[in-house]
Length: 524
Image (cartoon, rainbow, N blue to C red; front, side):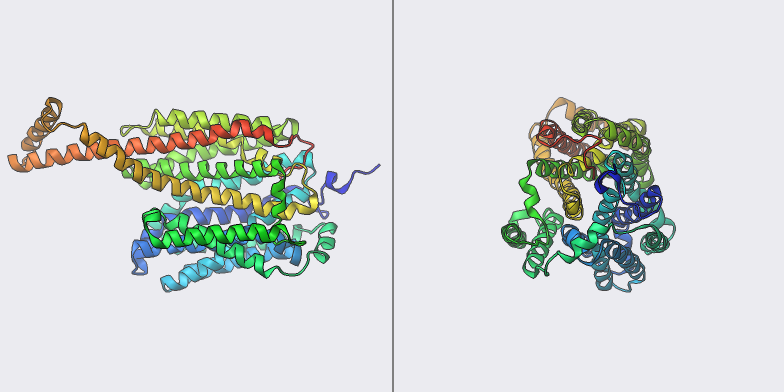
């Protein structure tokens, strides 16, 4: 008696592990490019003679187009064929990367980044759907563990690699390095990626183009990305433009859900959220994105800005955690195939929450490199037990015919979580630092004995160094003010870590609202 197709997997006659390598390569390229472009902004601004604020459109333009394509990628893959859509995305991303590196002005660079975002947005959902169809349920855990290394490892090493490339070559090489990788990915994809027969049938029944749905989601997600990216810089809802874009995003997205719910062939199958398990799994993926990307920004930023470490030292803080992740992911892949994925997720979020709580009580201005590295490693241990199991649970009970649709939605959840996490870091640090600085200044009595002794000691030391008495006193008060500011900023960073820890802890009980995700359950 033969097993049903969904229990066997469809390889098209090729080695399934070659398929894993092929699709992981393109995702690593896309996620890495998002991370390494961030550290190149000052060089881009200087090279193209634009301000720092203007240069941020290099990031915003990519995020907007990427976010728009992510949720509709499943529909597009079904309509034109998944292999054809995937290879088109790789080609689009590779060509636009070349054009980004050749861009003569900021305007052209932004246009090419939009095109790059369109190509990049379709990569991850297509790849995850390809893996879900290639492997039977009991093997998907290991396949997604290998794929997950690319997704989680790229943002960890991206800033370090981007800094090295920009410092030793040119910011243009941040984009040029994608070209050979993209070409190799296209060659391999053409040979080893094959659409399963059921996709050919689904293509004939996909329905006409839903222009209203496409327009509403493009408008809603584009406006939301603008709000998240520019909110803190423009003082959030104190700025009329942020209020306007927030209202636009809310109205467009609400209208989109209402419209798509009634469509026979929706561009995004929002009815999947009627399943409690699917909705909770996407919420967990959102929180995973918040904590992963938020902490990836937070720790290097603190040691660079407030401790004066170099970009290379800041990158060193993240690198060991990335290697730990590489070691743990295959282990998690095996565990997912044998045990209920919900217990792995609960353990992962519990470890992540404890690691963040620990960091919120350990981070201080004089922290040494070794301690900073271990703080990151503790977080990575928890994160390693989340990506693969959550992708397992999100597909539990979902028909294989909806693999494309689920891929787009769950990847959007992770990406939007990353955007929210970064926005939370920048906003909470700026706001809480002001609160702590005001509190510390209020409690600092100008005539207190400790303060006067501190200022007198600094003044004397500066005088011995050659400063006049007046200049030494002025500089002494400046040192005290900087220390106060540093303490206020440190307390703000601790507040953010506490918030992230609470988010992770809240996911532990929610895990058990999802379907059982064992090795025999669909994994994605």
